[in-house]
Image (cartoon, rainbow over all chains, first blue to last red; front, side, top):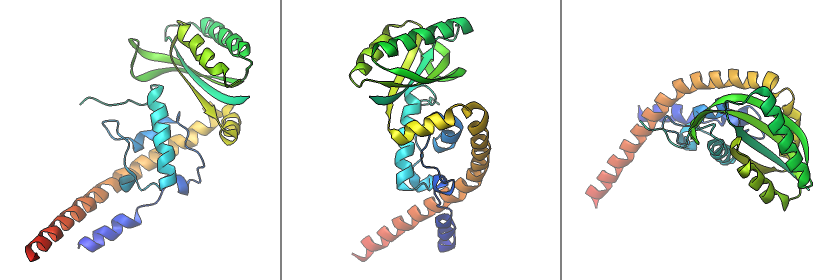
Length: 78
Length: 156
């Protein structure tokens, strides 16, 4: 049971930016970044989103820039 | 001479003419520091993710320009002193980023926004399906490791 579920989980781990053949992640594209940020404004870890390391680094940078220019929140108070 | 991208947030209550005036002034500043505006985009009035100087909204300007590296500090000083600018960010672009920014630029509002929108929707729906089993699986694996640890300690 667990192994089955685990396998299903692993097969879903495909980097969404690699599948789109995206070379750069634009920081001003809020619609692209929104699903990769949690409700509280945190960056979703690659362990969950399935992004590759290269794109996760780019994403971190993009999110931080977007935060700086008020496109994304630094934190969301609940 | 490096390539830069300046994103400026202007006060939300400016008229179109005032925005054009501000852009002109900024252009003059950039020229003063041996730069040149290559492209200026109006992203328009947007809701800010957090309050900036008590403003909930802001008028976004995206300026792609070149500049002398030493001039950037002075340019940012000018931005800081210009009272219509609420917030600014200047980043240096490498050659690839510069070309991508210029290439995507003109049709950005019309063309590149739409596919990304659709993609975003698809992704969000996909993700909604994805996340739950992923989380469940994660929780389960964690449980599993815990139980494993326990058995180990018991054995020891």
